[in-house]
Image (cartoon, rainbow, N blue to C red; front, side):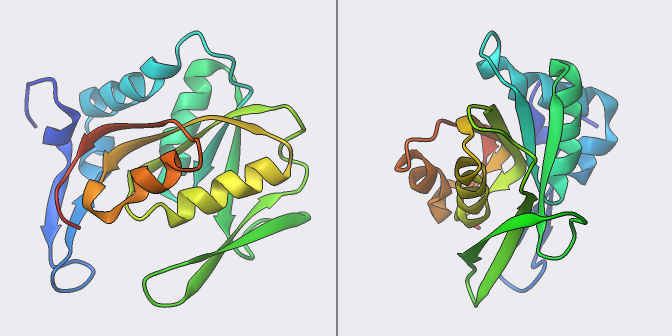
Length: 179
């Protein structure tokens, strides 16, 4: 792996996955490298140093890896937002649109309390649909979103603009043109 200081250099690109025309940004190579992974976690935390954060919320599934590590570093609890039907207790749900169709994510209805300040974490920001659904779930439970942190932003797909238009601070470690 590279010896320079860029998180972007640890991310592998898979051409035509999951279908033709897609440049898949694979963060598993970043996760597998101890230096790269630590660098990513440290850089994701940096903008929020000194801010009050009560919980870290991770979006399924790679957001669990990042969110768990960030929650550990902050000595805070971790809350997963999962695909419909994966959480065992009572949940609230939020539907969002995909390119073709829709999807639903859920959070336990007791995972957050009114006034909790949360940091939402995921690996990649594309159209922003999943992150927006996660934001709405947290807000329905009375939480305040401190920010959303991502490893990769795909600015051409508009996710950052979407979240920022909701008044959400967005932090991404790197970006890639295209989709």
